Length: 152
Image (cartoon, rainbow, N blue to C red; front, side):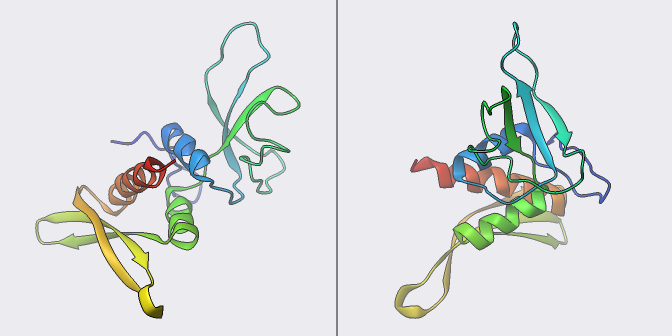
């Protein structure tokens, strides 16, 4: 089971591992939460989850202003909700994650959009069982990001 952090809206945040994959894949939506650590200390520090104190959202993966090893010596990685990460995959990468409840439980599917001859067609990348809608989104996110980064 994913060790997601729950925020006040009851949406699970991505795990640190998912956040790293999203950063590598080019995730650039603004988020309030981010994982960070201080790299200018004498000893390595653990990654921690923080939110922007002022409450506004920031693209923490923006290397010019935040990103890894910013001007103040911090490493920052955006920590969106799983739902926002799934939305980013759908809108920016045309990878769709669906969850379905059926008599025996839940399953998730990942479908890729392609447009031959100006028609929208989907091809099934994979599907698998899951414990709930949220579990399916998280597992689907892991699978989709690994697929997306395979070519990089």
